[in-house]
Length: 233
Ligand SMILES: C[S@@+](CC[C@H](N)C(=O)[O-])C[C@H]1O[C@@H](n2cnc3c(N)ncnc32)[C@H](O)[C@@H]1O
Image 1 (cartoon, rainbow, N blue to C red):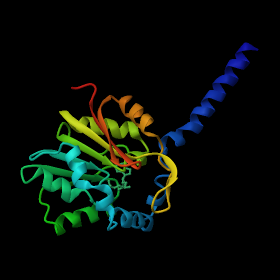
Image 2 (image 1 turned 180 degrees about the vertical axis):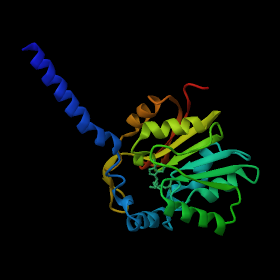
Image 3 (image 1 turned 30 degrees about the vertical axis):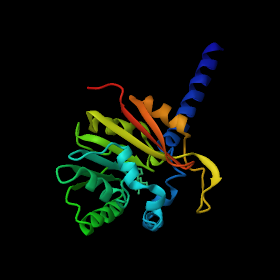
Image 4 (image 1 turned 180 degrees about the horizontal axis):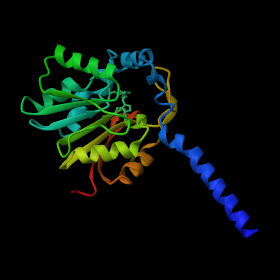
C-alpha cells in the first residue's frame, strides 16, 4: 500500500514538473506576444522611435546616471532599433565602444542603419539568442538593459551571459517599468510587466549580482537599478 502511494506521488510530481517546463521557458509570453511577427515588431518599433520619446526617456540623463565615461565599452542588450546608440556612442567617444545586441535580425538591421545614418563608427552588433547574448567575456564596463528585462524568457541564462561579459568592476544597469494596472498617457496599462521592482531586485541578486544603487528614471513610470557582480572571478 505504501509503495502504491509512493508511486502515485512520484507520478504526480513528474506530471507537475513536465507541465511546469514550458511555462518556465516562456515566462515573458504576454510581454513578447507582439514580437512574434515582423508586422508586430514594426508596430513596437514605431513606439520606440516616437517623436516624444526623448522628452519622456531623457536619454542624456540616463547615460549620465549609468556613469558612462570616455573610452568605456558599453553593451546595449536588447537594443531594438538602436534608440540609445547615438547617446551611448557619443558618451564613450572615439576611444570607446558600444556593442548593440538583440535577438531579432530586423531590429538589428534598423539599428545598423541608424549607426550608418548618424555616422556612429564605434558601434558593433551582435545577434544573440533568448538564452545567450553571445557577448565577449570580461569586456564590458556597463551593460544596459533598457525596457528589456521583462522580455527575458530565460532571465537566469541571460544574467549568466551578462555576468560573464562584465569586467571585474563592470556594472549591470536595469531600466524597467513599474508593474502597474494604471493606464499610461497612451492608454495602455503596464500589466504585462512580470515583476515589481522588489522582485526584480530579488531575482537579479539571486543570480549573483549585488544592488549598488537605485533611482527613479521617469517619475512613477520607470526606475533604474545598478548592480555589480556579487562574486568576482
Ligand atoms: C521594448 S524593446 C526595447 C528596445 C530598446 N532597449 C529601447 O529601449 O529602445 C525590447 C527589446 O528586447 C529585445 N529582447 C527580447 N528578449 C531578449 C533577449 N532574451 N535578449 C536580448 N534582447 C531581447 C526585443 O527584441 C526588443 O528589441
